[in-house]
Image (cartoon, rainbow, N blue to C red):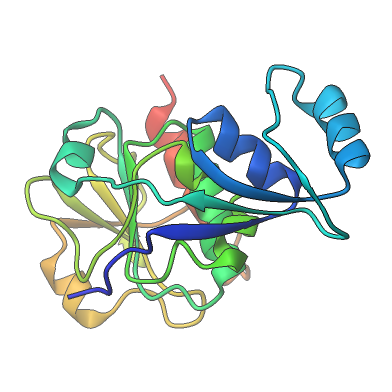
Length: 209
């Protein structure tokens, strides 16, 4: 079983705070330069009202972590992104950011999506769609492994799309469980893509009319 999700999460930087507020997060504490924060909000997020700010040198906030339900997430329309053993938390966060922009149903991962580095990489968009830490891919949806040895074809937009680690790819166990394998077309000699770039390529291909 994966560790229990945190009850509170740390938001570093204005963009993480901005998206947390925009998508309904409960902000428990904000620290930073009040004048600079209000200036940034006026420039980048005039739709938002900032909470009370405690003076400090860095922009740091604490928010209550949302309680996402896996079954409810799987009922949402759109593809589900599954990230198996991501090595870099910044890449994990960037993949969440892409999934939120593409309006994916959810992001599931064996990594830690609520680590401050992952939140910063996602610009706080963990609050924009269900993001859950899981031990294995869920049942109930077709499992598509994104793998260099797969077929070159469009993916099912209702599937769970599985992406492996940046160095080793998907595990043999997941590849054996997958309903199909699909590869991303690439120029010969290019061996791989950054995790977030791979997620973007597959998601936007799946959602294209």
